[in-house]
Length: 189
Image (cartoon, rainbow, N blue to C red; front, side, top):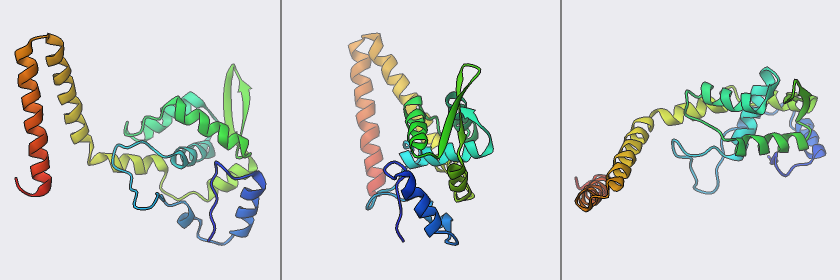
């Protein structure tokens, strides 16, 4: 079955694709797909299609401005996904360019809503929202990420003291930790 990219498709491509695939299991078309042999690791950045699907899903519930979309994604993923304006606004622009989203100035804010074609696309999204997948992916890695950030903070603090002894001891501790992790991964603990 052919697929299209929301980023490169024209309006007629999307309309033709929707008409051609009526009655097809659209959930299968929207399952995460990655490049050859590629997987998304927990805590890794969302791909462009994930951001676009999330925007479409949110706008399917209600009209929103860009900052509201960013806040909703962070809140709904329990903080696991904190998209930047640099990912959300280009996604909105691309969706608007493909007539899936329109915008209007409301009270000094640019508020986005789904077009008719966008609502058809929203109806084809899988039941599991993209932010739920991001939250699930991150549950197992949150503890590791928090420990790593704590280690980074301690390392920065040691470097800021300017004390050569602290810096040397910290470097040795980090080298030992790295070696221990690789030994664990190799099964030679």
